[in-house]
Length: 347
Image 1: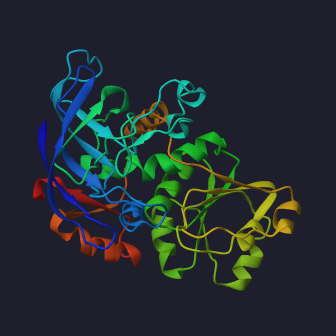
Image 2: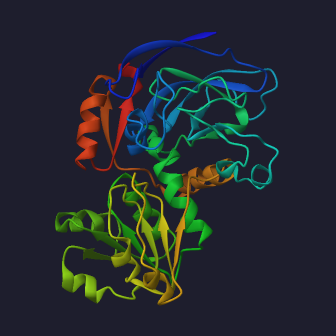
Image 3: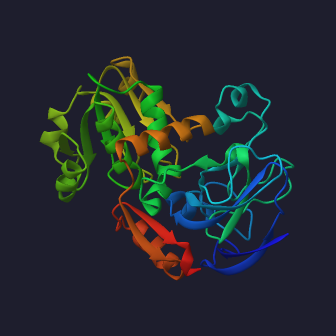
């Protein structure tokens, strides 16, 4: 077993604090890499608080993980010692269901193994995430990371990046498409970058007028203040797609009014309360409300390769691991541009 240092929540009421545990030894198909940087996702906070479902404690969050390979199993063919590597939200899946066979492991019908607050495929052994110094993952769920990009700023691509890339690719957002990105945070700023890179006409929808300059700097073509009735009225029937990245409660019906006929409202943010949608908001205009999770492993690798080719990374603020609880408080207030990343050398 591999003794591993980490920060963990012992239960839903305690702050994160140092904890030591044992990871499995490197098996024939495993890759071990030392974690250099780990992104901080809003879902980390949701899960240590049991906002969505009862958690598995102690819990080591973190699913935006990048580092360098230190050991590979005897049968590993995709990685060698010294390679850069990454792992996102998944560390395994059943491999045999219809979705897994279609490179949609994120929708594994028998239950995927998530990087933390989950179990291995034996459905018993807990998984522990990237707020730790090293990790062991089956090579099929380890991703190649380019040496060209700032490694710390690559880390959030493993969740925030693929969560926005996947739906934009699935719905073929690109040239000739009018895309609105709702919310300009960790997910939203990546949605803007990808929408612009794909050639779409991109509008940011935000409650905060102060974010307009940042939205334009990220490449957005337009900005709508959603607390301004006149601007909302002017945006009616404007967009082919709204990429909704907001994890707080909000009025879906207002935003559905901004979609064109046959438009689609794509939810990637995860509010903890159920959405309320008026039937007429979708019937009038044959509109759709859809959802999307992360991408499969092949699509996540495609996204990383696209980012390396187009020099796309997340906008980050680096923190020491000892400051993680304060970072959570700031994240709740939206006080980060746009993703915290932990320098794991500080563990």
